Image (cartoon, rainbow, N blue to C red; front, side):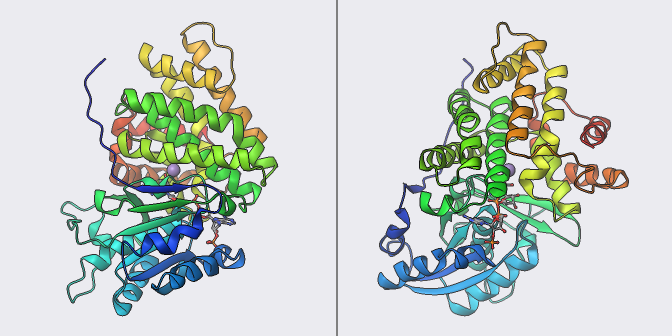
Length: 398
Ligand code: NZQ
Ligand code: MN
């Protein structure tokens, strides 16, 4: 076995049905005045915004609500939230929602913590610049309450943001934004409608499969990713068909948590590298749907070009997907693609880029954006990739 280094940032994770009740008492140990960041509707409509405010206020904390997060959150949304946090003197940022709300909370925590009298846009911290602004321990502490099982953001040190002007979607990374406290309450997760369960569950599956085949994988991620891949093959259709199935919801939340840790300790590869430009150029396409359209073609490509080790990894994925794999060959490895395609059909996510309204004349610009914003995942792909390969992969997904 080759030697490796493994370090997980510390997150105090409270996992289980009803765990939102601990929010106030636990947050009291972290701050006094919280900016509570949510999307525009769901958490209010489902009563979890009120529940969170009540828990915080009961514990003697002050709460300022910022409820303007949109899916694929933008620089403007983050900057406006930063202004709200600064104006109100908040000392901790809580993200209540899916990846979009939690990522926005993280980005607000960075920009607010580094405020020294002059406004700073979050974009100044993005790695797309030659010399991005440094993210330090001045960042405010972040608390995450997950309402989806997909992004892994509740335990990761990434915060995704989209610059609509330059049409770049990128992940800002820092150990300082990894949530100090993370709450995974199954009662919130069981409110997800089927389509959201499908999109977010497939996102978690791709995190696991990508981090498993990645050049940055290590024996610990190999072990945990494979176990969690099996959880998703076994339980995602069940969670999709019966939203109130607590066993399936728990399994998905656990798999999402393992996937978040895998993102931190390994690295995603091509499907994520190619999906970010899609959402940057077509903001209405959700992250999970983009991954559904791209993933099978990329798996085929990696198997076709992969060496014995890569092929073996896809054979193991196929086994987790319930396929009978008798030997380690490219033919057997392709059964992993079949397993993924069958899963996509079961959760009604077998969609092409054409179905999503993507136009071929945007491919060149999307490829450019992928190389600027997602260089790391492109380089971590288990087989080398050229611009021409990416063009072919986008075309194949039409
Ligand atoms: O906006 P509201 O009204 O709150 O509604 C949301 C939103 O419209 C709704 N929703 C969320 N939880 C719900 C719910 N509706 C009913 N019941 C619930 N329990 O769902 C819609 C989508 O929410 P969003 O947060 O956008 O979904 P998701 O969790 O898939 O997050 C996607 C974002 O995470 C980023 C993606 O790029 C994307 O921006 N990612 C973040 C990562 C990270 N930080 O490490 C890694 C991932 O690869 C991913 O890229
Ligand atoms: Mn993802």
